[in-house]
Length: 169
Image 1 (cartoon, one colour):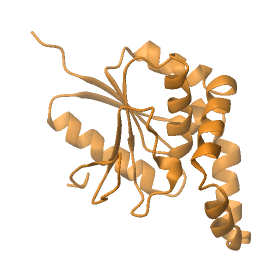
Image 2 (tube, helix red, strand yellow):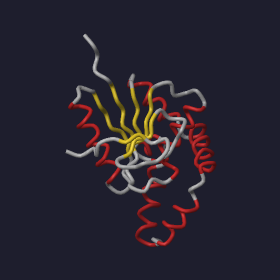
Image 3 (cartoon, rainbow, N blue to C red):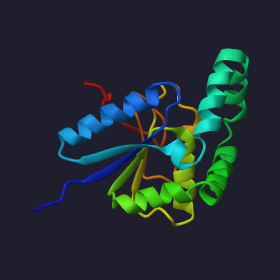
Image 4 (cartoon, rainbow, N blue to C red):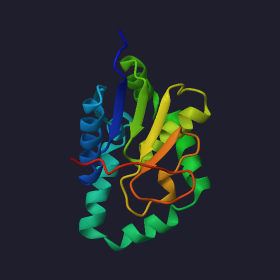
C-alpha cells in the first residue's frame, strides 16, 4: 500500500490571506489523499510578536511606511542575505518541526518563512521538496526563491513561477 503524501504548510497570521490560502491548499491536497498539517512559520522562527505586532502598528499608525518598506526591500540580494541570517539564527525550531513530521513536502505561504527555507536549502539542511505559495497578486521579489523547488502563484506570468489553479473551493 502506498503511503499518502505528508505535507506541512507554513503560514503566518499577518492579515488573513496567508492563513486562508493555506487552508484552501490543505483542502485541495486532502481531497487528493494527502495528509496535511498547517503551522505558524513565524512562530517557529520566533518572529510572530515582532512581525505581527509590527504590521498591526504600521497599518494603524504609520501606513505610509508600508510603501517605503515594500520598495526598500525589493533587492533579491537583501532577501537572500535575510534568508541566510534567518537560517543560521532563527531556523532551528523550524527545521526541528519539519524533521519531526517526516514530511514529503513543505509549502510556505509567507515570504520571511520562504526566505528562511531558502537559506536552509542553500546550507544543505533542507533535503525535502519545498515550495513557496505566493498569495499576492503583485509578487514582491521576497516571494521568489530560486533555491526552492517551486514558486507557485495564481495567474502570474513571471520567470521562475509555476502557475496553479486558484486555491479556493
